[in-house]
Image (cartoon, rainbow, N blue to C red; front, side, top):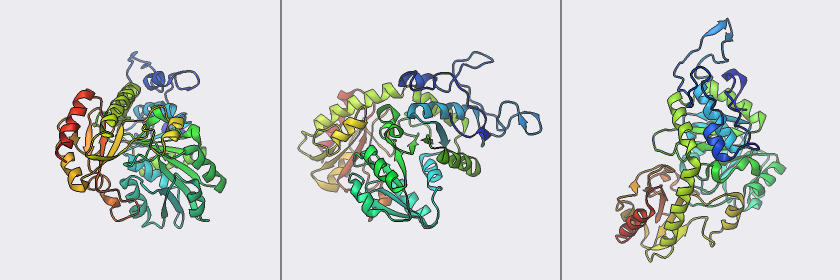
Amino acid sequence: MTGPAMGGDPLLSGFENPDDYGFETRAVRAGQPHDPRTGGVVTPIALSTTFAQDAVGEPKFGYEYARTGNPTRHAYEECLASLEGASHGFAFASGLAAEDALLRMLEPGDQVLLGDDAYGGTFRLISKVHGAAGIRHTAVDLTNPDAIRDSWTPETRMVWLETPTNPLLTVIDIDRVADVVHELGGTVVVDNTFATPYLQRPISLGADAVVHSATKYLGGHSDVVGGFVATSDNRIADHLGFVQNAVGAVPGPFDCYLVLRGMKTLAVRMDRHCTNASTIVEVLVEHPRVSHVLYPGLEGHPGHEIAGRQMDGFGGMVSFRLAGGREAAEKVAVSTEVFTLAESLGAVESLIEHPGVMTHASAAGSALEVPDDLIRISVGIESVEDLVADLERALATA
């Protein structure tokens, strides 16, 4: 079900098929058979960098060298591919490494369309790294499929979207975008980091590939960096398998184990993230020092109806703007105690940041620049009463 044969045969447990087992069951069991030699119920961390062969060119179990394939990595790839409803899964050393592998499908002169509020790191990778190699990009309002048609050129090959977006929580209609892009002959890539496969499965909505920063909700504990691509397109899978092996930006076995462990509790964690976020949003919308709250769960959010249709919940990410401008936003960001001032997101602990200065500084001065009065919070799984009280104390300083 996962990567190419050159990486060894995936270890199947019999729990991989979404038609046979529910999400939570597959998160615990898919790709994770009991150890055939010891009966161990936890996937072993396979630390070996090389593997014995029965004869020249005949590895015992399909594994040759750990960059090419590793049993722990294959368990992780099999599990997450199953959760995304994909035929193939590929693990990378970071989310940006996963994105880079997909962007290597493009050739000099090709164009990629990306959302006009994309993650700053994605924008930097596309504009600075691949831009230097001759790849062109255009920022487009992806909430309007006609904007895709208007921006399409004979050189356009790919549309790159996040939904919900980081940090403005814009919701994109994956199904509508996929219909337009496929009609025009392009490839649709969806960054599913904010939603996770528990809340949203883009391949079922028409996406050609799904990319994750596994550092975030999938790992879920702020202790591992990783990336992932899932696809059911054999052409994309062949490309990713080649790049994964040829470039070697792969995670080590311990990192794979940490993400695999994290995914076992993804469903229960996401339920708590969502309920805590919803409670906090109710407080923020009534607060006099907050001018605007960005959250798909609000009925007044422009993408609320779409989110309700393509997601199974509204997520744990919330952004809001301060009536007092940038100075007020920075005061709030440094005044919390339960919320930690830090970059990243999606872990058990609650985090707060000022995107314009922190995660999205690389987009300053571009079409993707974010408002300087914006705060982004990643709502964790702590007692929601403590989180609300912490934010109220911090907002009193604004």
